[in-house]
Image (cartoon, rainbow, N blue to C red):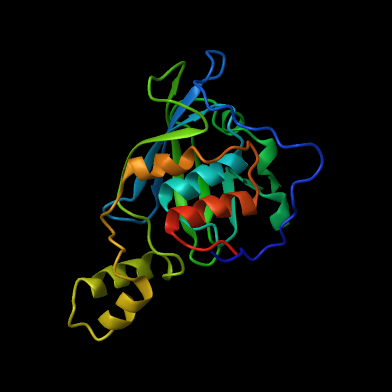
Length: 229
């Protein structure tokens, strides 16, 4: 698990607030959102239940765990012409994602916004609010993945064109680059693989409302069977 290309500012000051692992109260709406990775066909997507008072920094962590990314690169949320990001990234004109709730930027059903991960490969996700509920029998904090399809592309594979080139190569053992790609990917990557149960196993490990890079990185490293550096 490598460090993203940005200066990390540790959380300081008073002890961070923890997420209470219980059912959300009636006063806080539950958002059913769908995150779809743009340009994928058939689409890579996840359907999630989150609290309406989820800040965008926490949503970033939820999306990293749910989609299968490794948090090795910068990210931002885009709503119209406004960007939101981790202040540690020091992106020009970006607002603090930890100070902004999903209910602030998407107050109604059918509202959409963008989540962009890795400014090189530029993995763009459309986030749509499908429903805003007062309760849901399956919901517990901080989030629950209720559905989804397909694994996200491997990190650093060259965006959508590179991803589909890779998939084409891996379908042809006689391709001249098959052995090279197999060694790079390992034999465990399956583009069709998705397991909501595995996602939820690691979502419950998010204990803070404002997780920093180190805290999220440890969860992702455990998920991927990797060492956290």
